Image (cartoon, rainbow, N blue to C red; front, side, top):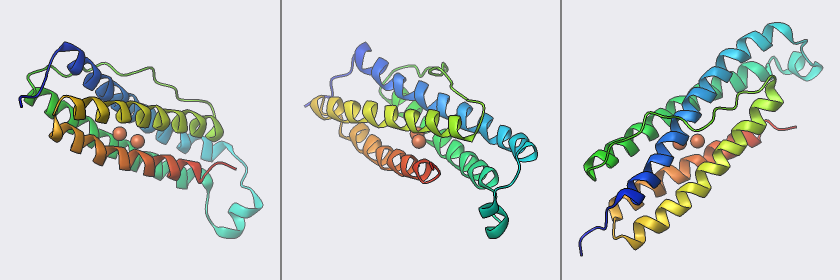
Length: 156
Ligand SMILES: [Fe+2]
Ligand SMILES: [Fe+2]
């Protein structure tokens, strides 16, 4: 059975690329902003007691996850080219925020949207007999779920 590839399918996969580029830019920008917020904020008692600064810990996590999203974008773009399509360079709307709570709300939303889209792609790839794309998105899905829970741990 041949894989059914058409413009609708490539467009759907490109939504994933747009979401990944959004996440890369969003998390990396928030990472740089945590540096600024760290200087401006007064430390809480818990931060003084534990020697851990929430802004620093979240800042490091944002950088690491941004790099993980870069790997996702690369893998998805490669798959689009293999399928004969052209991958987009356009991000989905980027939402940064003004403080750590805003960052977390926007990032939890981004991860949730990614998981919803990837569930749809996994279903579509299955129906089209595109097992390799299905496998790729199942792997990426598991990582988005981890990102979601990593961000969720920071919510008060
Ligand atoms: Fe991702
Ligand atoms: Fe993610």
